[in-house]
Each structure stands twice: as C-alpha cells, then as structure tokens.
Image 1: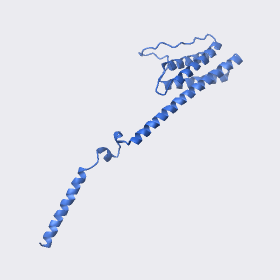
Image 2: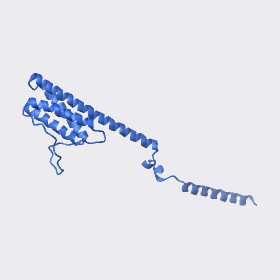
Image 3: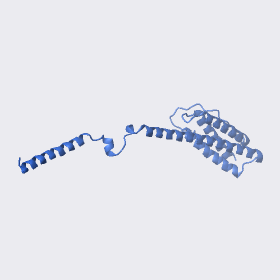
Image 4: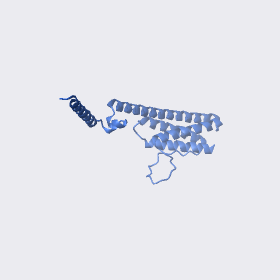
Amino acid sequence: MSLARFSRVLFFVLLLTAVGGTCYAQAVLPDASSRTGRPNNEDAPQGVKEMLARQRTERDKKDHEEMLKRGEEALRLAKLLENSYAQNKGFSSDDKVRLESLEKVVTKIRKELGGDDDNETDDRPVMPAAEEPRPSTLQEGFKYLQSTTMKLVDELKKTTRFSISVVAIQTSNNVLKLVRFLRLKK
C-alpha cells in the first residue's frame, strides 16, 4: 500500500471518528434546565427545600411573636392612659401622644390579623359584631379602653401563626373606635 493511499485511509478513519464522537456528544446532552443555567424547582436538592421551609417557619414565628409584643405594648399604653386620667381627671398632651401610638399599634395588629377598617361598606357578609362598649364619659371610655385592649391581648395569645381570629379583629376594631371616641371627647 502506498503512502498516499495509507494517509487517505487514515484521514478518512480519523474523520469518521471525529464525526461519530460529535454525534455521540450531542445525543447525551443534559436537559434544557441545566443548559439555561436556571435550576428547576423540582430538581432542587432536598436540603435546599428544607432550608427554605425552615426559614419560612422561623420568619412566621418571629412575625407572630412581634404581633404578641405589639399587643403587650397596646395594653401598656391603655393602662398608662387610664391611670393618667384617673390621677389628673383630665386629658394631657402626653395622653394625646399615647392615644396616637395606641391607634398605630392596634392598626398594625389588625392588619397582621388580616382585618380591615370596620367602617368600610361592601358586599361581604357581615359578621355579628362583638360586644361593643358604649362609653358616655371619658372615665368610662378609658376604663373600656383598657378592658377591651386586655381582651384583644387575650385573643392574640390564643392565636397561632396558622390561625386567623375573627374575634381578635373585631376587638381591635372596638379598641380603635374607643381611641377615636376619646380623641373626639377630649
């Protein structure tokens, strides 16, 4: 066999090997999600899924604990307001600031519970209202404010991070109504 013929056969064999290897490499390509570089959620390692679930659980626990702390803060403010009124038989500028703070805290609690303004009118069915205190004087208003806030905190303590308490939402609405009553009566 001549050298020219041997080199042509060798070239042809090498060419067939290269083409065959390229075809094989294309046949065993990974799936589309790994080619784009974006992981498929279903293909995420179990450890990552567990970590995300654990983080979500910890965040939910933290949010619930913060809501309970806000409830305690609301109760503290209500007690301060009642004591201040009992001592001074009047409404001071500090009491006005405390009322505004109480309103903000209870509004946050109501929002976290999934409630909205009790005065809104829409086509939703109306739940029977919780027992609403109807004060006629400032003294009664401050007394009702503390007792209603205490009821709200008790309801918050009964809830879990998985539950929604209609009673707690209605009670928060009652606290807000009392705050508005006291602000207007001053």
